[in-house]
Length: 341
Image (cartoon, rainbow, N blue to C red; front, side, top):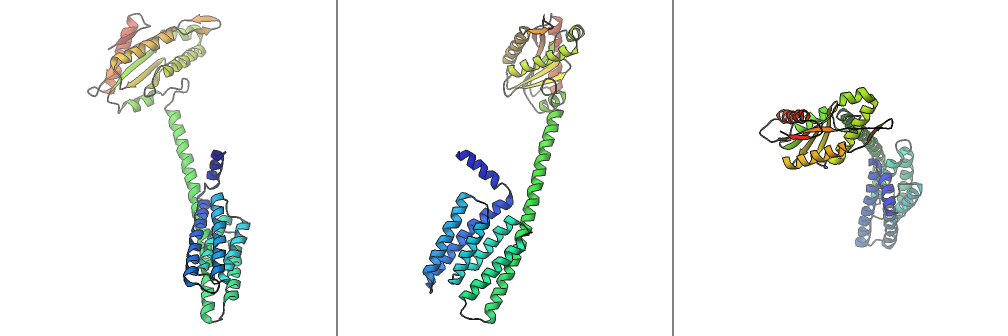
């Protein structure tokens, strides 16, 4: 259940604008602590009221952070009412709470309702200031005008931030899709579609930087005659089955390739020649003892394998030529066997 909730919350706050809303909500909890500290230190007329309202504000917003709810209308109404109460009581820094509330709500609703939110918060702020004011001077009105202008600027900034992060989020999504598509094309370009093994191009790329490995060249015996006698569909079935047995016979660090036609290559990094020969013999035994049936008729399939050892002193192509030479020696000696160069 907790895992499901964590997954759901991760999805809920996955976009950057939502994460900014959560951060700003947490910042408002910190800001109200400064108002509380100022009330305790100054001990004005309504300092106890300020502490109570600040406590409610802090508990309510921390509860929302814990629930990880997205900003909603009820949160807006409750927070505006608490901010107004703090302003009327003469709390310091209450204008910061209005600003943080405005930013997270504009990030939530976007440009279309940003102006209405700004007007509502500005009206509530002015009304609360008038209720709290004991003087009506030019400086008082200049401060109100300055704060209202700051509300408008913050609203504009929040809309701009939302647009930027949404565009960035969209671009990141497009880049991720492009990377996935490139990876898919790379896999298609380097994979043999019939057997699912890596192909010739992949063999050239993967072995180019390997300094040392054992190389097995596997060839299906009398494959042309097999195609002529039983058809290409059965020949494809044999290639697919041999490819599957090759995949099952190698270790996780080994690599298997369909080199071309009925020929396969196995690259075994960090392997001794003796172990490579054992792996080759095991594969040859598995194929020769596998039942291939075509139209109710058992068809005997065998493979021949050439084995060579690539070390840092010889080139990759030289190692392939050696394994290929060993393979043809196995063919000349009667097929269905392994030969080491």
